[in-house]
Image (cartoon, rainbow, N blue to C red; front, side, top):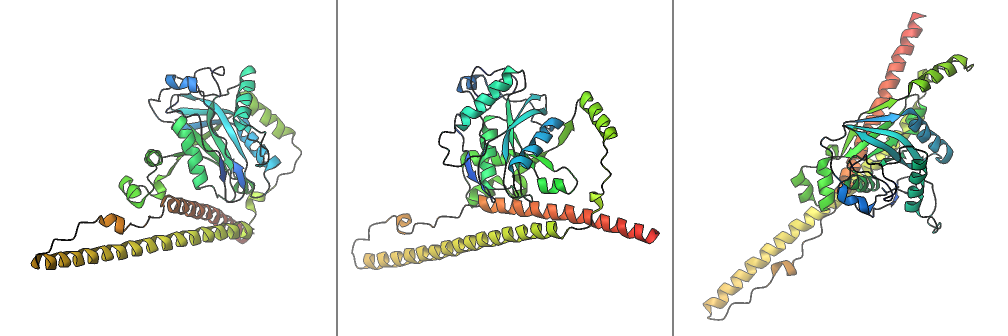
Length: 372
């Protein structure tokens, strides 16, 4: 297998490449704030030795220390809706992607012209290599605000990764849901159908219909397994025994109005956006139908006039390019609508999970109250 790294001197030969490219889109705007997406750093000298996996990645094994680093990164730099991002490092073992390390991507404004993000990643991976730590690019991570992560920015960034590094994934960390008592960390990849559409850049309604792409066929979730070494497990047991913190019962907290209200508000905003896109598409359909009628009427008048001229013995009118006279209206891009539909579906799933948990708590509290 070939390696993925910043330059030719950072190489140990583990992760394969496919169609590497030296440049990737990095700057994008999320719903909450303007952030800079970490793009994969790949050596052009290694492109010729790239190969492909015999089987796709079917499982992700992530070290517990990586999860703690991601959580710590958000706690230190993320404030509310602020999005934090970072780079995932690891290796591929058969059909399993092992994420063994990560490092945060520093936040900076456009005024920081001296900051070179590519050089920063290269230096980080080179430093990790010098201390004999896995340093190969296998994806990136990003925090989310109430599950708001399905966007064109994330799609473009993940396409750049998967187009260059076939096994790349994006980890989505939800600090809001994690604060409710359950760790929310999910891994996503673009489906093969969507990868082909993005390569061809055919986002027209006809292209998406031909490829049979729907919002449910855009991202695929890869199961995650969190792994700790035996020494870390022993240490955690010792720390738990020595802990003097009293047991807390936040998991049984029945207050949920704030979380549910915010989720429903974001859901309504996305439904409004979808309604606007539907209006645009209906307007395009009406304009196209109206133009087709005008074109048909023009051809009929043309034929009648030529028939009259022929009966009078006059030469027929020269043929004209009908497409130049009636330029078809530009169809609106449908990819944004699919992304909005995917985000709406994600909000619905979050609300469903959250309300089902609260209903379980209510039934439990009712049973305990009746028992007493």
